[in-house]
Length: 264
Image 1 (spheres, rainbow, N blue to C red):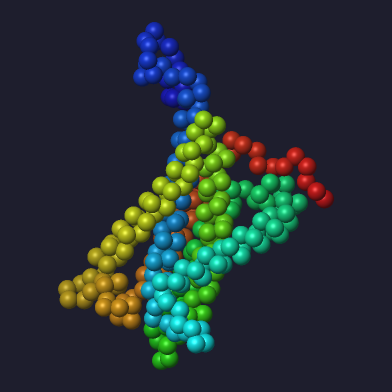
Image 2: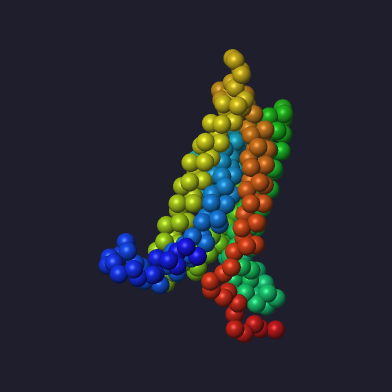
């Protein structure tokens, strides 16, 4: 309510003395974004870490497909391919199916879509931890296809959380501030990358004792404890997910997402 005082004219002129009602209302809307924005930063940490270390995992697996040798650097193609396929399936089949039952134009709300993506990231971390443990214990070099489940879940998280967050910011932003939606989205990802770096440094610092290196400071992943680190990331992601659910349940949409007529 203190923002409403900015509209009171006390006889002074200038933007720093009095604001229009429109500016005040736009500021309120942007401030409502902040809890979702901050909780999304925490949620995306696991996505950034998975994309980084999964490629390194892939480099230590059997990357031969018949007579073709797949370079580890090209492994990014796998989640992108999953993403393209799932995006087509989601838009053409899942959204119309959900729309008829929920009445929402997108099948589900933007925040629900984001939440599904965050849950997928947590599950991907758990699977990645199990696969990495099996890779280190395996006497025979593991096939690249063992990484397919976590690549698939990364694709799911991109289709749901990335698209959902971008649509959320763009649809809820004030009419005169639509460009801020895209800026907030990329700022979210940038801060998540920074936080992921801090998390790696913090874990290495906490697990480094004397001459013993930190979990991720081994000469290679074979001498590191990436599987343990994935469990830490999963716990951080789970805590962030609960925080996100709290703020998502409290958020009140500015724009109605329901369609006027829903086909039976």
